[in-house]
Length: 300
Image 1: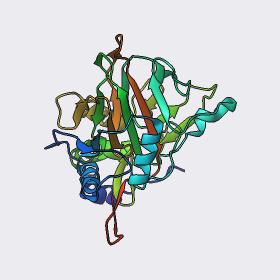
Image 2: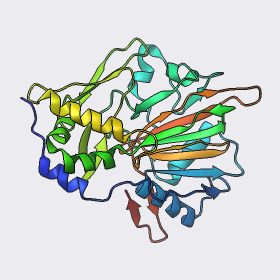
Image 3: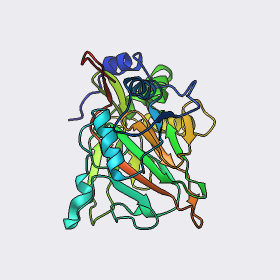
Image 4: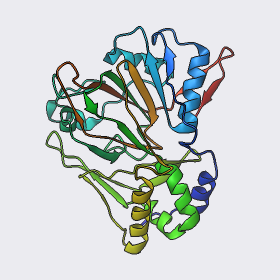
């Protein structure tokens, strides 16, 4: 039997604090290294994460490495990096921090080794919606051209859909409306769930439109309702809209973003001699926290 969507819970979550791309900070937060981050900078980074869904940090005196991401995880109490079980199938041993580069890259995921565009998605293909809460990406070297990170404020767009087309919004929150399928390490498992849901009173998303994702109307729904929801999100995610933004990470810059509230992707890029794009990525199961001098935790 299809689980009924709790409309009141969705509407209440949509009326609570939502991420906005309005008034995005122009400059990154500058820190010397990840071992000595001031309380003021920690507050600023978490504040940007809460209000805008992401924060960019420029690390001045530390060579980018997987250990840098692990250190950032400690600073913001994100916990240990999460390695999706998908990456360890077939006796493959994946690093806690993935390398994204056309050269010297592990075979964790084929797309990590290519220069092509990556469509909007949420990390954790086979994980339950909202399971992977935070992604950290660190740039060692940008490519010669392109490679911008793109973000879609899917939860804010969904809050608008709830106001304008309730039936379409319900369809996208119904279990089975999104099917994500694995296609690496010989695995073809599927993750069947909703596109949007509520976690701890907050809207969360799993909005993904890659080649292995598809929207499916459950038998209890009208296909036209889901179709309108899908089309609304497609339009809302286009460049130039209020819910779209793109940023280009430079060397020694990290971006910490909410994988549970934003969908993200990447523009295609091109390498050149001395300018070979290399990034590192870590997945975490917690939102960032601030621990002030009185040991009071402030979290998302």
